Length: 143
Image (cartoon, rainbow, N blue to C red; front, side):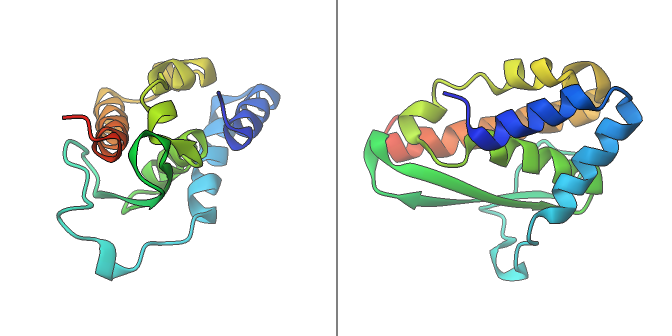
């Protein structure tokens, strides 16, 4: 159930052997994302639990478990913007039901990110994943 965009990132990670190159690649992914307009950087879209400022904005197509969700995100930190880009690649285009089945931490472990992020960044990534799952839960009507 992995997305093509995430698989492309995984393939590029395999090609890049040095972690410095991988970090640069993650930062470049973040730079490629369009910034969010200030009008959507609201308390409702802000992800709590991140050391940096992080916003995630969902766009739903449909309703219930079959609603397809796409995310846009932004951060004031370059590496975090890149991590958002990785998560967006992993989740975009999945249904609310599919998102509920994704073990994103295992996917990030597959990339080796679990071993190369500070504890603070890891907590922020978990907060972002939690927000994504909460949005999918809400779309499904789960409490």
